[in-house]
Length: 83
Image 1 (cartoon, rainbow, N blue to C red):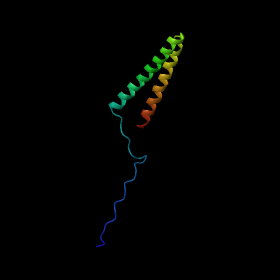
Image 2 (cartoon, rainbow, N blue to C red; image 1 turned 45 degrees about the vertical axis):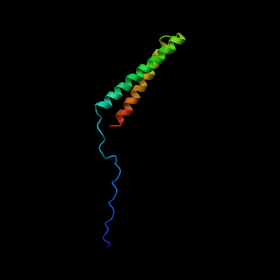
Image 3 (tube, one colour; image 1 turned 60 degrees about the horizontal axis):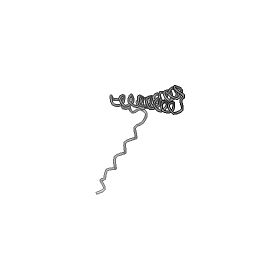
Image 4 (tube, rainbow, N blue to C red; image 1 turned 90 degrees about the horizontal axis):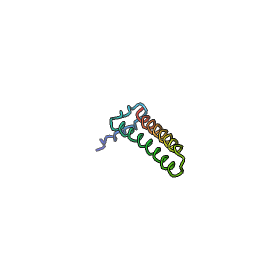
């Protein structure tokens, strides 16, 4: 009656040698839409501030710059997930 088999060993967690997932079309589409929204929202906020302050095109350009930087940072972070 003492013929119990030991429980199976748990599988080790995936390590750095495990292959990563490959990005699909949806990943690239969402990255592109997010980048476009960053630039549009940044430029739009800058435009609204310019209209209120009468400093055209200063804040529009600053907003576009912040939007562009945000888009690049988001894209790089997203791409690093697949490297």
